[in-house]
Length: 231
Image (cartoon, rainbow, N blue to C red; front, side):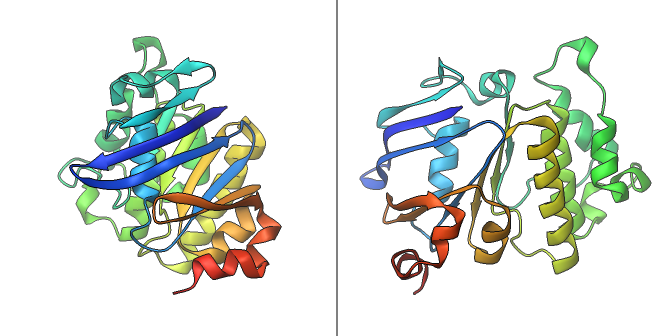
């Protein structure tokens, strides 16, 4: 389980997170929703070590992560798919996938077959440069790269952003498969309400750097939840 306890985070004088507490359990999809600028991406930066907490703690499977570098968090089993994908545009699809070898022991450095089962287009484009792929294909590549690291938890920052509907469905199916077949934890930040409603086991809603709603996915249709998700 990933556990965030009373986490606060600042960018200079600006406070992005205010005493956030949440958990993401193994074998479950946890979705964090909220409008733009409420701190969702900052939460994931805290979890993955991209930005240090001002106070509070993050732990995974009982191991404290505070102060741990992002690459060491990857070795602990945290796979990260950042907003905007951040693939290497001049490297081939194969090279992008193999960049996920970094936290692995030499004996484990291979591309799992599941990646090509989930995203067959990647296998047909192994020799293509990442920058030549469509936005949806790049998103599949970014998820595949994270899966190469053999994560125990997959952390995704708005994977549907700018993606065509057919590939959104493919990504949704892949996330469900990973939960059901591997038992990994999925922590998903998203603004697309229907995507979370369909996938999530548990949801959190953020507003102004705080958790303002928590519950099963079914609670997304309550007036309280909708109030925090509409402009």
